[in-house]
Length: 481
Ligand SMILES: Cc1cc2nc3c(=O)[nH]c(=O)nc-3n(C[C@H](O)[C@H](O)[C@H](O)COP(=O)(O)OP(=O)(O)OC[C@H]3O[C@@H](n4cnc5c(N)ncnc54)[C@H](O)[C@@H]3O)c2cc1C
Picture 1 (cartoon, rainbow, N blue to C red):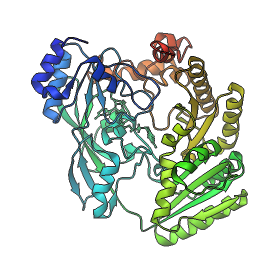
Picture 2 (picture 1 turned 180 degrees about the vertical axis):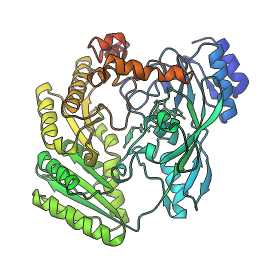
Picture 3 (picture 1 turned 90 degrees about the vertical axis):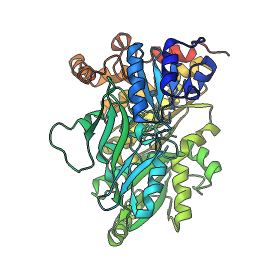
């Protein structure tokens, strides 16, 4: 769009012109999210109030322009990427914590509040907001709701849907309404649950009522090194089977260690092939008991190095080397393609071996970082996006890993959603009838053709068994080598 369109003119009547982006060179900033895919939006608008959002949606409707809600753009499945020339509605200016009700342990926040900043806002009241995606220093609560985000500490306490009581949304005709509320239970259909994880396809979330919980009395953070990924995986399976539910059980493998050690200096042994980061929290006595059991299980599986964080500083270093591991992978390759698959934790040992074998077979490095306790794999396929054959190999490897997850009774996504990235793989787990039943939800809320088009559901080509051709086409079409 090199000339200002009638749509942009109308948007500028609602939002200051500085907050409407339409020049092609400026739109490039919004071409990406955190995934490997990309596409240019038709325009971007950055409102500051729910009233403006309602007006923007009415204007978009008048011009037959679909709308894509966007938080921080850290999503890893292409959810915030605009297809079909859609207008991106960037929600980062709605960034206030509106209310903290200490007694009832509820906060009302705007969607552009950054996850970590919500935690910081409620900490002085002795409270915390549990879901802690590793991207929490950037991602927004609206984006967390959009993807039903998880995080290391969701193992014991549940993901976003377990911590959101209700939300204000703007529907496709501009109506502003609440789904759920600030109470623990509401009668009738759980529409709140339907919208959480709907990837911006049903409505725009403009306020969120979140559940807060007291900070734990005690926390113990432990690190165990292993001489093989299989030994670490067997330990995880045993911890889960033992009935202990740690706050977090995370794993990183050798290749990941090579990236994080020089970046954060967590002090992992040089010969470690895998590291487990286990945290137990709760009442002081329970924490001591659980830590003892976790140590016993790690020793049973031959941990080569065991330590407990001595103070908050050491704990923070250990968590930084886990939560910022993806950024550190930039030391190893220009790009990574992160796969978000889920398997039953008992199938970890064999699946991790198969992923390593796949890396050897396709001759493409794969670094693994896992929310291991809930079987949520994040194999990161390292590649160079300037090399078409590497892009293709990465996409093939990603597809093979997703197939492995389904074969062992797992799922296609633990927390990052389907978006553009995995829509081609939905036929692995759903029949045509299932998909058609799900697709009826969008028109039921009047959102058909309006919010985030081209996402979640497979295209005809993908239904015919060509899952990643469209992504390959977008990634290589304007490649300059
Ligand atoms: C380094 C790194 C680590 C990560 N670690 C984790 C992790 O541990 N756990 C995890 O779950 N994810 C993780 N992610 C993925 C990502 O951070 C999450 O999916 C996050 O919830 C996205 O938030 P966002 O604000 O960036 O949303 P965006 O990427 O902007 O949007 C995500 C989706 O939500 C929709 N959306 C955004 N705002 C709204 C709104 N107000 N109303 C309606 N729909 C909306 C969008 O349309 C899109 O479909 C990680 C990403 C990175 C880059």
